[in-house]
Amino acid sequence: MSEHPGRMTLLLYVEGAASIDRAPIAAHVLACRACREAMEELQQVLRLVQQADVRGYVDAPDDDRALLRAALLQEVDAAVGDRTAAEGVLDALREQPLALWDWFLEEHPDHRTLGLALRVLREAETELDRRPERALELTEIAERIAGQLSDVECRSTLGDAWKHRSNALRHLGRYDDALDAAHLAEAFYRSLQSGDFDAAQAQYTRAVTLFKMTRYAEAMEELHVAIANLKPFGDTVPLAKAIMLEAAIRIEEGDVRGAQALWRAVFPLLQRFNEVVEQARVLANLTECSLRLGDYDAALYDAQRAVHRYRVLGMEVEAIRSEWTIAIIHLARGDADLGVRELTAVAAAFTARGMALDAAFVKLDLCEELLRREEWEAAEEAARELTVLFSAARVTVARTHAADFLRRAVENRRATAEMVQYVRAYVLADDPAQPFSPPIASA
Amino acid sequence: MLPRDRVAAAYDAHYDVLRFIAAQRFRVPPADVRPLIHDVFVAFIRHSAAIDDERSWLVAAVSNACRNYWRDLKPTEELPDLTDTARVGEDVSARVDVVRLLRSIPERCRTVLWLRYIDGLSPEEIAARCAASTSGGYGRQLIHRCLQTVREALAGGVRRGSP
Image 1 (cartoon, rainbow over the protein chains, first blue to last red):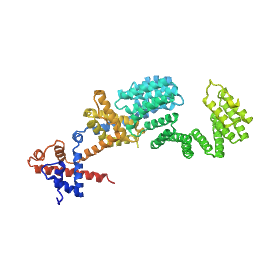
Image 2: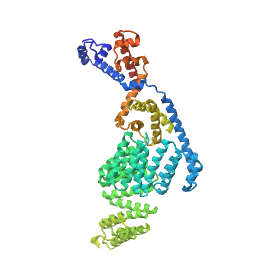
Image 3: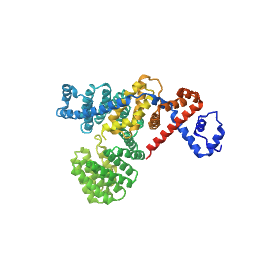
Image 4: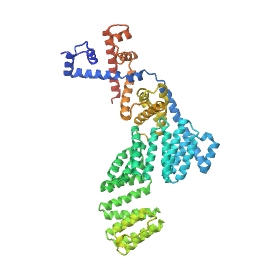
């Protein structure tokens, strides 16, 4: 066939019509690029119109779109109003003891809204570290408010309340209760048609508790279930947190490289969510990984970034801790003079903030390095200071005794860097059942 | 962006995809699609600050909600496995694009194409149904012209979408 076939002929060919002579068309299309492209385009259009489920969708009437849009935006507006009102109610509640909150809400039943329940739970979250008992009480108040809400709101809020309760119980060291509470939270979320994202977070909460209980294998198993359920939702803050927990478990299990890879992977995610505090923490963790792997340049780079972020956030103590790590990195890579100067500065910074125990541990590092360099007088001063700091920190008598043993050993020129390590390990373990006994070689 | 604006933008961008998944993929009855999508968006509003990729989140949420819908009604029935939400999202988005394209062509053309390529009618039958004619040639002309219309709409869409 020398002439180009018309589009109608091509259509019949594509449709597989028996009424046309197919062989010459096939030969022509094979040789002619323009006709081949025309045929491919025709096939593409046919594929589009042949989708049966597309047809069903095109033909189905859709009166819901505008209605649903208006209803949702109305809910958003109502939620904004509810949130603002809840702030006012919470201000009024804060003026009275927690024990009277229920009474106040009974007197004002119209205040028992979803907005207030969620606001009380946010309050519980902020109290977790400082006053976990109060956080626990707040979750109970939120639970009682939830009882007044509509079915779906009630179940969703109860899920939130039990998840927060699980966190509070964990902070209080009541791990078994925390696990039970997370189970209950998951059950409430699972009773909702759209609760799977929350249910995965309840699984994550359980994994955190198992991690705190040092049941690492179970924590990892639970966490993997949570991650598998979170992943379909794309990149989210809960997924980032779950990845960070996996990295923390790996570190505890000695898989430094695995943890490092996960922390590196999660960092851009935290940047996207502008989670600056978590970014700084991840950088501090990456520093530890690189330090343990002997990659001092990477460790130094990440530590400096962590210090910068902590300072921007006004988290000065965390910044000083990262500077402490920088000093250790300098010592590890042979910049001993710089490392010693930095350790001295870090100890002074902790002391200035009344953080005697932290300052004492820095002095231990300093003492170890000075002994290594056989700078006896400076080591003696460091050992003396750390004894004073341990006393100021009101540590146990046994720990003070260990510090005093070290001071005397330095004064008598019998101390070694290994002896400092021995004392440090004892003080860190802080086991009240274990009295201090000097290392065998020096006994 | 204010939450209201974000919700409105997310709704306008993804409503069709969510409705398609619920109605076509999971065969949720039309009367139940609206409350289901509503619940998904309410959950989205609650979590919006923690979400980076709206489409992935909404597709996953609506797929799970549909699964839960059927789980509650028919616990023993096997449901479609749509766990790879990234692929589902892309596939359904492409189909929704086709829907929009097909809605943009005249209804008569759409009918001709459905009759030919989904219902499997011959050109003669199409000519009889659409033009009171028995001529197969006329039927083929009709089909050809409608395909041409789709092709032009497709090219127009591509042009509009290009930078």
